[in-house]
Length: 489
Image (cartoon, rainbow, N blue to C red):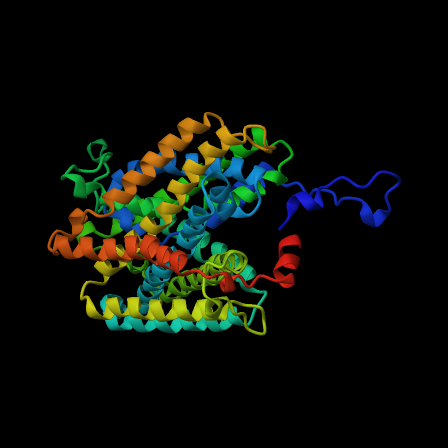
């Protein structure tokens, strides 16, 4: 959307009512904090951190300080000065090829994100039908393929209810189950039951078992990702310089509460050695409801969690691919086949091609016996591909501050170079640590793990966009009047 065009001053003379610029619709910093919380917070990652017990507090706070905070403040400055999202930020700060790499990685991370998200859906749905299915790879693969292709069918019809499904899913599938989980866990301990995980001060820090003991923290970077999308609302604050930092600190506090308390509640009830990374949330609900003779509630909560996850998938399904499509039609980065739209104006060919890759990836659940291992590998690949976006964004922000110091910005991040340095170092460290097999999967072959992660992250995140860029042709630029109208709307 061309925001500057909307805010341009009227021509000299007495302007007509139609020529007057529209009044800016301001939002409060508290409203922005709640919007940010709703787009970031989720229960899906809770089992991953619950295996650490009390130490999950430390493992959530550290990435919040070194990643979430720099990402939020830096992206706010970029969004308040340059429209067009991460592609334009990186293109202006570095180069157009690097901008394409950034927008490609924003899209490509979803290729592995959907299998991991829908793997959680499959395990959760199993508790509605038959809990034994939660560890069945074939069941998981079938659910992934059915749900994804159903999502493609819905998205390809250009339905306008997707946003409503996702926002409703936050309350139904995240806030309500999260509160229930924490309340029941507290009552569980209050009845004199012993916590499955030690809750003494000696367990505030994770046990050190070499570099592999830190690997699970990488998953938290993905939990906090997406802040650059919320930064576009910085221009809707009356006083961005004061209100945006307050909004981000409040959002960070709320997100930490939503992440940490359910993870602790799970660790109280389910022993770490019995915890499934995909079905851990339902394991905890199942155990708690059984404790209170209310097992009939387990399927209901499962349906609520599934509804939230599917709503989130529908929101993500069309968004990143739409951005990639518009950039590719203007610059010719993708072949015309992938740029075609259906009668509803949806990039169906991209979604279908992505679906074919997702189907192949889903078969990994059927072929690898340990569902939790597959889930973790896909989560790591997703995180690493997305981290490439942030590495580029931090470098571009420093370059833009130095090359265009007088460019109008609605918000200037304090100590920008320092923030970018911390964010870049944290992102790079997380990317490199992701290649180390976690201590929980010590029985597997480390070489196979590294090859799978490297093939997925580097192949999809770097090699594929490089091949598209090298193969581009002038005839691939298909942007016409319709794209111009979209850009100006």
